[in-house]
Length: 228
Image 1: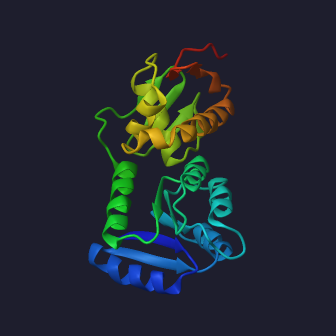
Image 2 (image 1 turned 180 degrees about the horizontal axis):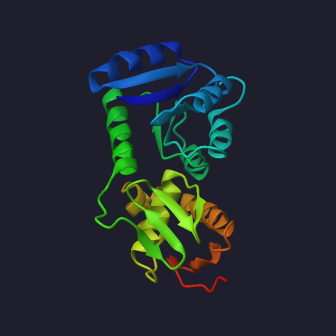
């Protein structure tokens, strides 16, 4: 059974979703405050997190930032604020999707199922994708550089997998967003730059961030580098 955590101070929403999710064999654990939700994430295993933006104590953006320091759990942010700037901030902080309130529960379930399919997908026939010292394990979505594990979020992993799939190919920002999410690429081009920066920073922990080259005016590509 799929197990989700909802961090939202709306008690009625939690009760509604809990009833609705039962028909899809989804177990929902509901926390009303971000501090309790973060503690729950540390104590139990969840497949996905539903995170409200407007929360007591501190907002969902701050909660997302804290969670991403130690967890790559898929995150869907929920908010009554539908401004584009909020969507961009959420994606820049590492959220996997963003759904404005009010929403239809069926749409939320569809988004949950789509993200979980991505996480568990085994579409690659080969066991390992290799680019120089980078090794990608598609079935487990684990990444190693020179044998050292690199922990990535879902979007960071999918960006690296996309670049490794065609080394040397220049991917425009729209190409990347279409490859990662497949929707409204022109709305979120700012988020691509932040996503690339985050991935570079993590690869730089193994002195490999420079393999992602910026092609000014065009996009990004994966290039060979010499690392001792």
